[in-house]
Length: 359
Image (tube, rainbow, N blue to C red):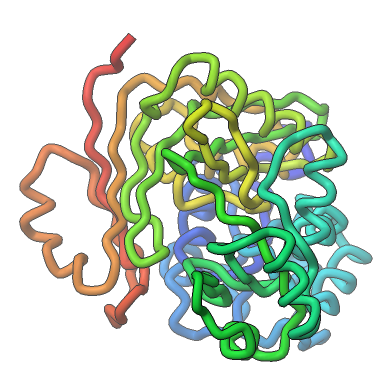
């Protein structure tokens, strides 16, 4: 069969061997596409679902060359690709989404500046590289405010809430000497996200707006449909569509947002990859975020993003996965990631309950 960057029978390379890489590989298999997982961790969950694996450092050019020779195109499950690996692979095979899009989203100051250049709202922010700059930023933005590292950091890592009375030197020390950003605190009523996908032909589709609840800074529950006015849902979907098109992005990304008391929608962060808040799409849509990402990066037509059911997805974090036997008795979809050690804060799986779609 001809057509597409990676046709059926072809091989898609995936950088990263965590649960997202695992679910991408499973989605590719449904389309008759093999996957080759590259990850330095020998206990990678994604290694369990494909026969083609490379366990090597991302800086190992010999291993990277062998990996590139075995695949037709490359994608990734995480955004922090070491530049040496990205540059090496891009010279050999298509790497999608294009790593240039990562340059915009890898730094929170650059990301928010880009979003604002599109006329889309974000929290007020200031770049912070010293205590003097932090004091000036706090004076401008007020307290409470959120101090974050400009790069890396997720699930609450690399950030500190600056309250009245917080010691600025101590807060800055928690950034570990990394460049930081101070963001004004947004008094939101809801955290939401949109998962969007863009094909090689420029076609853009979005999944329905997702309402998210966090526990200890980690996503706990995602619900669809979000309990917002229809205009808010349309506004959020339009924002995600504008962002993914402006990045000239191919594949799936998620845009995390705040909904304010006045029903304004402000962008919080962009995740340039398949996203935890979109896991429900495996069970409540005909084509999941994972399959649509595979379709996009392999040069296939995009699948439908329409939801056939309402869904509530709950993350199984740490010891939560120990209840797997009870969950298996419930009318829902249990997804376990094959991780052997249940550490505190570690995502071990998720459970999705679906119900008839509420018109």
